[in-house]
Each structure stands twice: as structure tokens, then as C-alpha cells.
Image (cartoon, rainbow, N blue to C red; front, side, top):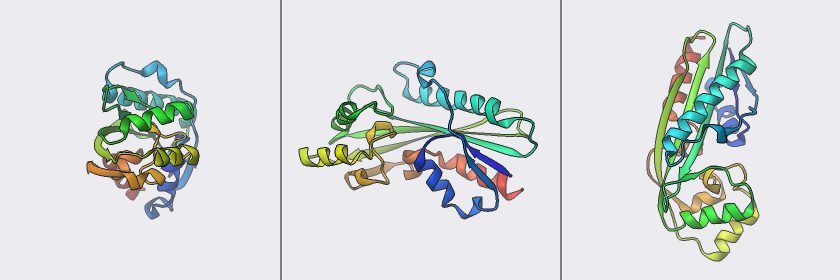
Length: 199
């Protein structure tokens, strides 16, 4: 089966490539061109992550589905909820914004929301799976914050950190799944495995 990850996320790609259950299928990565800002619901982080993921799914189906008879597209979106304001923390646009985000998270617990959507050639509708996790970040010292910023692991990461990367040593998962924080809903992955097991 042709499995398409419609995402530019290196983290998602590497995790999926490491899964043995995917090795017998044709796995492709095709990043999308989508204006995520068009699908933001101000003040509603969970609503926004769902809106963006569904918009990605429709864009991906139109772009990559074509007339092939045996394909499955996987898209996902992850956002961090600002613990101080309840607002949306997406991917930082530069060093200064990354530093502001990490400073806001430092010494606090925060929520991470992920929506992963599956759509296959034999599905009449998309299947969306939303999950949330709570992560606590230690108080970052000035040198620790500078090290994270200079290391640039914040690039392309919601909330400016990668829990599986250098920032992980400052993070503690309070509830939910590390996979959810890393950008994939576990329930969607289980559904994907179920679908592929029949192919």
C-alpha cells in the first residue's frame, strides 16, 4: 500500500521510518503548501489544531490522492497551549520568538494538543484523532536557555522544543503520550497499523 506522510516534519518522518510494521509498504513523504493561519480559531487551541489537521487532509487528498486505488494519507498538526495566556504556540518564526516561548514555558506545566488525520482511497470520510498531553518544564537557567536556542533544535517545533531532543532533559510528561507531544496521535497510529495489517 502507498502510505503518504503529508508533512515536512523530520521528527514524524523518522519515527514512522523506524517502525517495522511500515517496512512492507511504500512510504513517501510529501510536504504540503498550506496557509495554516487561515484556519486559526483565536483563543481555541484545540479547535485550531483540529481545523488545521483537517484542512491539511483535504489539501493532501486533492494534491496526492489522484486516481490511484490503494493509498493512505497521514497528516498531523501539533500546537502548544501557552500556560500564561492560554493562547496558541505554534512554530517559532525566529530565535527571539523561540526564546520568548521557552521563557513562557520555563518552570510551568503546559498542554500539548495533536490532531492526526487519516484518509484512504477506500474511505468516504476522513478519520480524525485528537489527543492532548501535559508536560512540565523545569526552570531554565540563562545558560540552559541559551544552549537550547543556539542548538537550534527549536526550529520547526511547536512551542520551540523537541521532547525527544536536547530539551527533553528539562521536560517531564505529566499525562498523555510522548508520541502525542512529538506530533502524532497514538490512537491514529494504532488505526494506521490496523488498516495496514489487512493489506
